[in-house]
Image 1 (cartoon, rainbow, N blue to C red):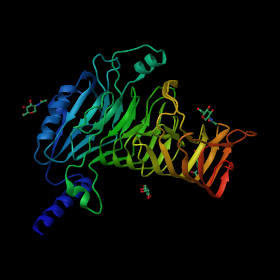
Image 2 (image 1 turned 60 degrees about the horizontal axis):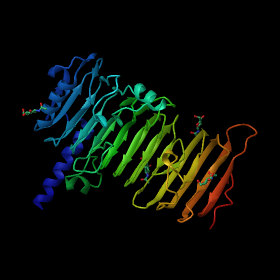
Image 3 (image 1 turned 45 degrees about the vertical axis):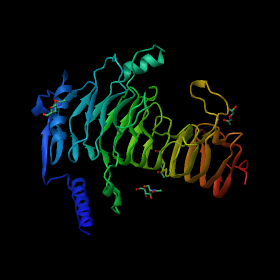
Length: 405
Ligand SMILES: *[C@@H]1O[C@H](CO)[C@@H](O)[C@H](O)[C@H]1NC(C)=O
Ligand SMILES: *[C@@H]1O[C@H](CO)[C@@H](O)[C@H](O)[C@H]1NC(C)=O
Ligand SMILES: *[C@@H]1O[C@H](CO)[C@@H](O)[C@H](O)[C@H]1NC(C)=O
Ligand SMILES: *[C@@H]1O[C@H](CO)[C@@H](O)[C@H](O)[C@H]1NC(C)=O
């Protein structure tokens, strides 16, 4: 019983941190006190590392403070944990990457790793200055290194993750999750991420992550600039954000489960994609996603507004990255995918495309009140199915007669 009481009070303390910003028993470390100039020219990497060191060593909950009205130039940096207590990174100022291409082997620019209780908040702008990379890729010029992400947090003890970068928000304290109102282990809120060389924010090997109020912006023709990429993670919520990039708005990769995307506006870009399945642009709500272990199931797209979207609803099990693929490798089993209250316009003639594998049928694909009109006046919107099973209730425009029971 005594043990139980202790556990509860710890949870309350941590909750108070999230709600009240840890006003009690906290200390603050400003990067300018550690020598950061914030003039947009001086390399402030060492000052940030020193500030991080102090913050992370602190034995009370602490704030790493990045003041407003300044622009801090940072080279690749790893904010490494574990830290002693809860950390808040208050990003009020802007952060910029040098515009040049890096030599060396950086998969990331700003990486938060091995930190269990972390909150990154503020309205600062994080500018990945990706233009040089995009132009290399567009012109097929090879370069020795490629930072995948503008900004990411990752879990530590994961080997065999070579070219990507992962978020660390691993729940190592059991009591976190025993509360009826789970406390997120990582929170990212309010930031503006722009022009990443590749993905803007990566969440990997993590649980209980809350991402909200982000604005992510990259040109529509910038290659591989995903907004948020989630992989090998569970209980991730992305909400109230605006994401426009040259690639996926939100991409959900292998091993993701219990992902909820709500009130997110996407575009330009490729919308919300799951595994090798690209599905639905614009607002979406997704839950219970498991990919990479052979299936994608229990997925809900609900209350979605489509505006002149190309391929608004597409399941493509013949997808080949780089046009090179061994046809009919082990197909992912797609089941229980629901489209509810999806409305708007399609810029492609095929508005509903269920192109499933010949070997493994898609099952439990359901439509309830789906109404997609052609974006162009006098245009047509049609549906296509291959080996897809499911049902329609309420309205379905275009009709999906090819869906088998
Ligand atoms: C962080 O602080 C510790 C203790 O003061 C020191 O030993 C270590 O070298 C510092 N690390 C960095 C990266 O400054
Ligand atoms: C996802 O989040 C939204 C908004 O918080 C909530 O209304 C909805 O019930 C959640 N969906 C699931 C399946 O948990
Ligand atoms: C859908 O988006 C369009 C264009 O942004 C907007 O005019 C319309 O009000 C939206 N509809 C709903 C139901 O949100
Ligand atoms: C379905 O996939 C096959 C095989 O890749 C492709 O040839 C066909 O064009 C696709 N159909 C549609 C409507 O996308």
